[in-house]
Structure formats: structure tokens, C-alpha cells
Image 1 (cartoon, rainbow, N blue to C red):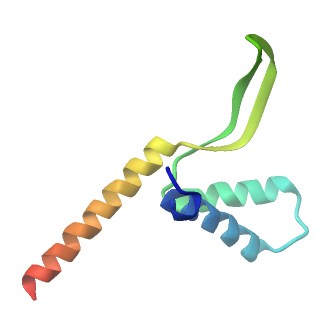
Image 2: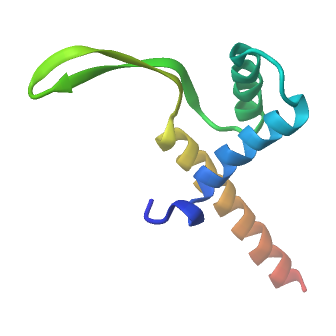
Length: 99
């Protein structure tokens, strides 16, 4: 993923965040936005893990754990995204052949 601005998966995730915020507006507690985002990611067929925990290592010493609210499962999402792009390309080729 070389360039942040050009990354399609990043663009799709940010689009989901924008959709949630623009639909719900301000004023709700964080948990409401998190649940709405989870729902929107599912609608967009993006794979993710909620509340994923990571060990925090500092100079070879475990110093604690960090819980990430939302962790995109990039490999699954990228595979699905690639499959969708291949299907689209095949559809375009099929249409071009028939014209």
C-alpha cells in the first residue's frame, strides 16, 4: 500500500466513516458510532475485528496491552476487493466483445 491517498481500501473505510457521521450527525456516545460503523463495514463487505488486543512491547519487555476499537482484516478485505475488481473487468471485457 504505497500511497495513502490512492489506496482503494483506505478510501472505502474512510467512506464508511463519513457515511456514519453524515447519517447520524453529532451528539451520540462513541458506542453508537462504533456499532453503526461496524454495520456499515459489513454492508460494504469489509472484513474487520472489533476490540482486537495487541501486546505492547518496549525494549523486549511486555509492558501492557492495547485494545483497538476496530481492526480491519486487510487480507480478507483486499481479497474480496480484488475478486470484485476481477468480476468488473470480466464484465467490461464481455460488454466490449458484444459491441
